[in-house]
Length: 105
Length: 355
Image 1 (tube, each protein chain N blue to C red):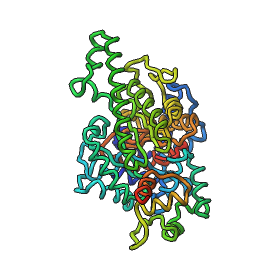
Image 2 (cartoon, one colour):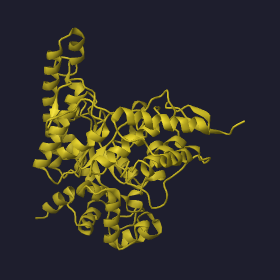
Image 3 (cartoon, each protein chain N blue to C red):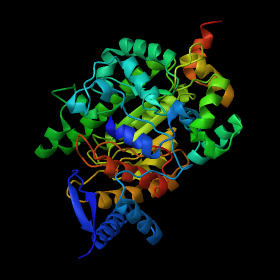
């Protein structure tokens, strides 16, 4: 695990701590290369690309948007509820969210 | 007396080397990759920058702010609860707890679960249990959750599987028989990949990581490409990662082709291109680490292969950066100084879209 953590700290965006999960969704679902994916997500979040990994910006923005925060905010969306909002925010299809939605129909 | 810099060998041993020695290793490493794969060497400026990264006096290094990339993985969450043979810490966590720890405590961009054996064949027998776990975890995780498994065609040969063992037939000169049994194993493997992915897709699978592909050679890779093509027809919205197992595809069969292209001997840039043709969404490059050479030699090779791979396809490229791959030392506990130098170099010089 130490090796994985070293990579994350040295080179990676930081998942739900910042916006790494959002950029990963764009790479996975739209085959976007890293710079295109970051530009797309930054535009959707209405922030500068440099702030995608800025905890000072992303912490509150994620809570405001209800897309899950790395600290546990009681009553704030996490898990599938956060992913539903992420799919809507990014305009993408997330298969687990589709299944979740289908269970309400 | 010349200043010496701390660096590592490919097995993790610390060595002290002069600047000229480090520069020579970088030059030799990139030349080796370029000659083998018929691709360009790293430029003089890139080699100079790589020297700066290796010779940095700080224990850890990192990419410049704004240059960060995403992280996908091949079962890293398993390292929380697995044992020594999987590089695991042995902490008594459930798979769900491990995923949430990785997502929230480690801030990973994506997470992953898989069978403890991490091969397709054993998943088949317990697919409903895996589907149940996947579904339950996907309901509480926020970051993308992959299911991962290696094709591992070797498990289809006797005594572990139904097919006569190609590795036993070849030394007997039974080449045609060895090829035939690999073709049979490849077909079984392809069907098992389809079976597993289709079932998981029914429970909202967010992405599948076909990891360490072609470990049993070209027929193994063929099964992956054929399965990927079929899955993209059936499930066009399902993200698929195809990650390979070495810098070139071993020609254990030697004659199998995909879309008219011989798979044996394909280097990373061709592996990526053909994986994209089959329908892969992300490609995972693997470059073997030589334990007899320095980290900078191995890293210069890996970065040279990566740069060519990144330029050869239009999908994101996430080089594999586990133990013994793409410049990471081949040991259970790769030193943090070496890991971060590999990480930074692959992103800033190699053009990685993720790790």
